[in-house]
Length: 384
Image (cartoon, rainbow, N blue to C red; front, side):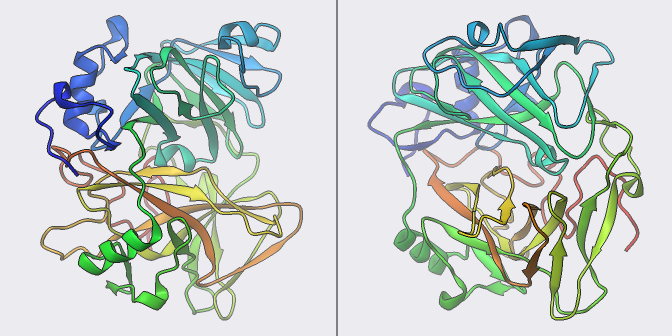
């Protein structure tokens, strides 16, 4: 990791993720622009930028990729209806695909690329989102030197949701080169300062499962009848994504109780929120991403990926022993049994270009530092 004083020092010769102070400079330099809407400083996270919905949403027949065309040209024959997201916004129905032009546009240098992911609170509501760019064959990947509009595809899966202009459902990371850590580097870094904790202690070498990243497993406990997570209810009322802390848990979720020996049987195509057994610590010099892991049976899917910013679960005084991760899980086709300690997803790590000026946690009023529950910020906390 190098020390850069300003964006002017950035070049193709360095590798890594841009930190908050360079993202702010990139906004000032016009790499990211939102016109008259401007980009609030609070939308800059330690290693990412919140992306906001524009003023209209288009209900579309199906998902798509633009390929060799611009998005606005490819979508012309797919639009079923247009919704106004201004003022009170609009309700997006479950199982339907929507396309929303985002407020932000990009004008990136040739050596800078981007990657997008849903915000944690978006994934915890089972709202499937992915960013689309012009002339692209891939979701969530922004090519080096991209100039143009950003769009987000939104598919609510469990709950109908109300959204409004300016709401942030996704985040953008800006990167130069390839700064990923291999398994050997991850193990060495874990020995110097733990990346994973189990039961308040650093994971030992045998507990550290690596294969292109660090694997996380399920915490389903060992006590029958204990609540280990939540399952989304069916046929609920609409949920307003612009109103955190205002929804009753029992209106949208039912408790998941462990069976003997830490087992849970997942109902097919039902959405579950569970916790990782391991607590994660992302030090200031690293950024992290959760990637889905598919067993070869194809019966289980952990959901929608997500960014872990520098400072997640980190405490320079080492009093906080990491933060556990919320795991969004769905079984396909048939009922599927999961067990305590079963591996379900993987964390991949990238180096920061330099340490961010602010860290996840108290620096930015983060919602999920030290979390012991899986519910997102939209719900009133149930009594234990």
